[in-house]
Length: 347
Image 1 (cartoon, rainbow, N blue to C red):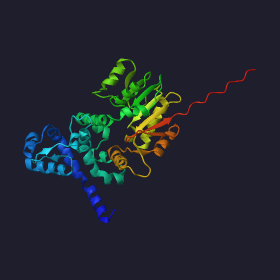
Image 2: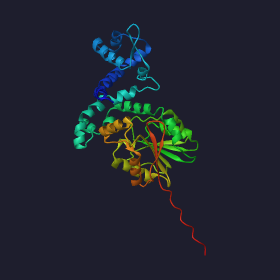
Image 3: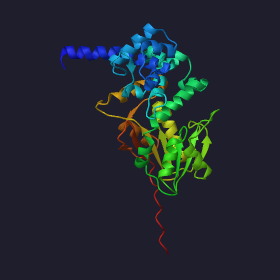
């Protein structure tokens, strides 16, 4: 790339936040939803969203240039395939993700990144004077948005994981930190003859997906409440940790794996569903997400070698990684099979 090309790319990276915040404003105001119904002028959009016409027009014009919105022959704004994904009711939409990632709680934390680099304290804690999950628990609105974002992110993923995570009839799978039980329900449905336990923190408003509720009613699943830092339900053959370990530093991640090891049946395994960083740094999203996890909660994304190191330190065999064709991989950590004692020879 020429010097001018490098310069233009760098400027684009520096100024990308402008588009991000315009996207956030548009989604918060419901503009993609309005344009999904019919073309609208700036004045009509301003009337519907109770905003001022001139500043709104300037934001929407930027989103036209960014190819998020479009214009028809009359000059009215129209929806596009990109804006359809930003509609609140889109079955494959990312509106919740936009609202969660770009809301003030996350956004302000980035201002303290330099201080985190100097002190080691997560920027989120420096900004809010409390840890991320404590902050989340205090706000039902943000907590609900966070949960909705996690559900949206899993919508097209859990079905693929059922082929990557093998279960045998008679086995019990424990979904550790499994949220609303979406993945557990998918695993049990795909593997007849198995049973499951959803293990999650106690919540004032605790809901599971209808598919898991049916499995609970049929006796194939149950819910247990508690913290994986205190322990994990015993007797499971397989423990699933989907997007759990990346929330924590190595010390806390090792503690979670240790509790899984202690609770697993002999020869059991932990299945970690997480992003696996490439060693040659070719996938930018993994590195940017790694920094986000660092800022929010001192968490991290890990490489295959990192997972192996965590696992072997906790008594597991080296990690076996299976790609899923998505951003996430399946990392299996198995316990050694106990050796059978040699039978004593008869007299």
